Length: 639
Image (cartoon, rainbow, N blue to C red; front, side, top):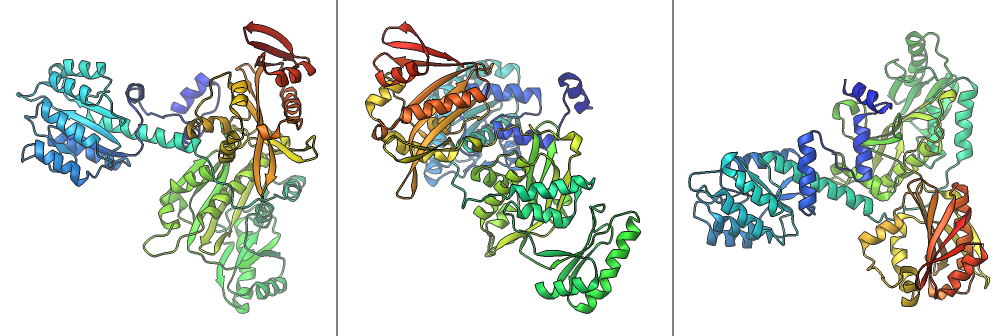
């Protein structure tokens, strides 16, 4: 019913709710479930800093609300802060002997402003605390407004979020107003405050992921797109939208995803020969484009250990399939070695009607629907995004090693997800794809079973990605004036360390020409905005050279489009060591070529009148000059 209501308002299909969660996380959007939570969150993020972790301390004058807040915190993934001995000692000195002697810090019902102030300041100084909830229940001896005034004063300079719950109505109304004026968000119920804290932490965690510098992938890989395309086109030419398992595994193999060695055998003799080649035990599976769920059809036989068993089961597999679906096309029986590894995983993707292909990872095997231990992510993926998908599952605790049991090569798993994401990005024909199980242990992993469902040819949507992938088409090799070779390519999030090194080679004079006097302090948070870009709305091209086997950035040019995608602002910066090599001309001409391909109408820029080199570049390309301010020009070029 809710989906139909959304449909009537937006004119678009309501997608899978879990996909929306993945999309919001990728975009750095806080999601709430109620209108009350919407206003609660708006109030908190406007007034308080975000927590750096999920460890909450609670100061209260009543045990019951403190316990209920703790229960809600733990049930929803938070952590009750473990106070240091020094913090406990300070509280022992200033609080009555009957206080709770731990977190939650119960200052007792008769506590006034002085006791609250002592508890709050002590707890906020504790390095194990990421945030604080202050609870007050009105009692005959308490002054809610005086305590609210003390709280607001005590947390003025806190870099940790402080939330309050003044429980009651008329008796605490003035105190609530005082807290509001003091910048402390307050809620009628402690659980509401805890909910806000946890959502604020999730928001922090999501932003850190977006701004995290991804590690380089373990190794490069080149997909065999031609082979993958041939497999898909062969199915279409035969009027099929389902790939057989053998074809699905060939498709995975073309993208560097290891699969079990297999062969489709049409008779017992070829099956016996192949089983001898790969060694027993083996698995038999019906090979039919019309039977997707082979187990239901009795088309799978496991752990066959001898020629005798294989002969007995080969015909049985064929007969079971014919009985299950008499009109099914039978290509033969797929034979492969029986392989067992420690962990069974699910890796899949499905095309969502709103967000396009969505990658799924989690616990695999026959009980995948029971465990429901999966996470979703939107392609394209990098190592950081792939790691978050894996680490958000429960099986991650086992994959990294648990109680003496060896884990898996996690970087290999993250890289696998990246390769899988490239496959679904490159081929919009793929409507559904499942690898279940993908088995892994310390020695590596491989796909034991795979299923691929294609879209109908008349339903293909080639502009199927909601997030623009890395624009590989704009990678170009060039020659510099003095004979050296360089590469021009779009910037990547992984370039952050190289960008810091690049800025070390830029003189203060060049910085002045670029930023007109004000040179920002380049921190990680600022640099992420330079290297994490939306390729659909912005383009930054870096010039790189190889030095001592390492890629070095020597220049960067950038255009940022306006909201209407008609005008783009241009900027450029080149390392002083590489001036005089014609790099400014190369980068400028290349970014103008890209702008024209994107149908941008006009390029604009600001240049200091003392920047002779840049003025020369603009004049040669026909930019129009307008002196808006003394000492600088506004320039523009109609494309």
